[in-house]
Image (cartoon, rainbow, N blue to C red; front, top):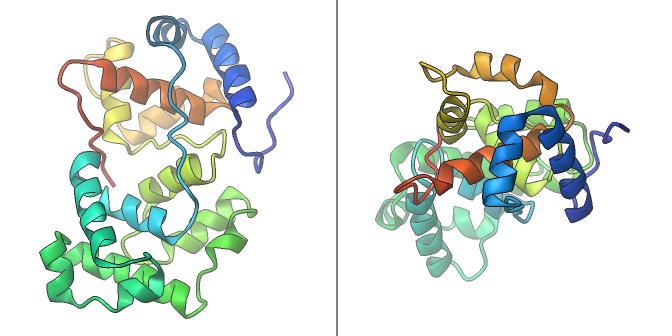
Length: 220
């Protein structure tokens, strides 16, 4: 099998190819694919708005974060770093931002507005550079970077090992007595390379198919 280049973004064609490879590697993933079909791409537009939304999703459900994000978009005509910085703490708290999320998102907006961070330039950088640049900002850790790389930049081999929904799905899928830690997940998924981002999509697909799983809850 030809290795997928690190900077290559997933496409519908490479998703299909990766799913076939994973199904041959792992019978449990094959069962998800056979039972539930192809998982969504969960693709997001790269840029400030998406990264801010991912920060909002830290340690809460996607539905709760999306509600706050939608209220924010109802307040500003176009969500940019500059328009976000016009909002004061009282306005952001009214929208639903916590004190910490105000700090984190304002820091992100300021970094972009001042030229400290250029998300467009980062798009073609390798994972290590992107991770280092983004983690310089307060409130951005590995989980946030993983989700941005996986969904916004569509990198094929990103595995968000700190994601709670993925850990729950993996435990259930593999019938494990205890929920695996991020370190354990990283070790137990090495054989899925270079398609771990597709495996993550399968695990989310599986998680969401279970009873009452209306939204993915995640952890930073």
